[in-house]
Image (tube, rainbow, N blue to C red; front, side, top):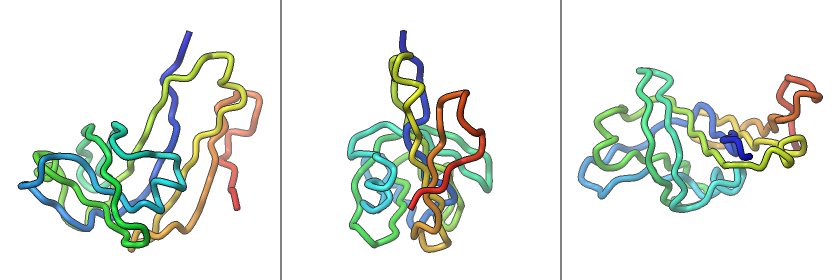
Length: 134
């Protein structure tokens, strides 16, 4: 059996651009992708902290260090430039592997630079508090 589990999360990212005329997707700074284990073409869920909108799209790698978080195509109707969002990636994980799984999480500042790195343990035997990483 497998369970759908949080794999990576980018928390409090700021939308830096909205482009209705692009062919869809979310463009994410490569540094944020690497820190969370997300990859290009991966499907992700987006939650807009400011307006409550939720939607799913796929990732396009943005330039490392650029801070870009670009919402493209039809999804650009759901957010505004400057909105704070959460980006979630998920994975199907075998139940046997759950005890050792840790979700990689980053928290962003207003310029989409990483200010905190965390790991969320999946095991119920570990602390419920997120574990800071270096």
